[in-house]
Image (cartoon, rainbow, N blue to C red; front, top):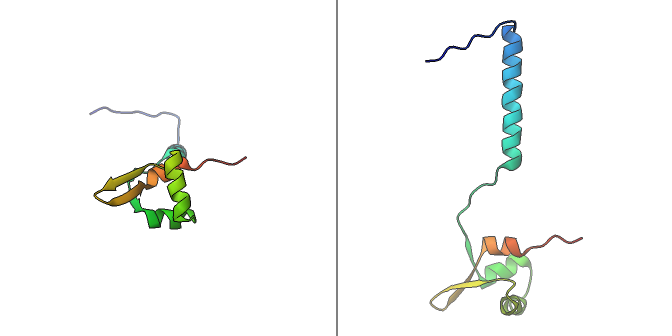
Length: 91
C-alpha cells in the first residue's frame, strides 16, 4: 500500500479541490459519453411513420441508396442507426 502525504493544505481545502476535480471529470465524461445501444430494426411502416413519409418515398430512398434495407424471409427492416446516419444537417 502506498502512502500519500500532503503538506500545507487544510483538510477543507483538500476536500474542495478533490470535489472540484471530480466535478470537472464528470462534466467531461457527460460531454463525451455516447451510450451504446443495440441496433433496433424497424419495419417499413415504422420507418415511414418515424420519418413522416409515405411508403413510396421510402421505396425511392431505398432505390437511391439513401436507406439500406435488411430482410428476413419476405420481411423488410431498416436499422435505426442507419436512419440516424442518413440524416444530414441543413445549413
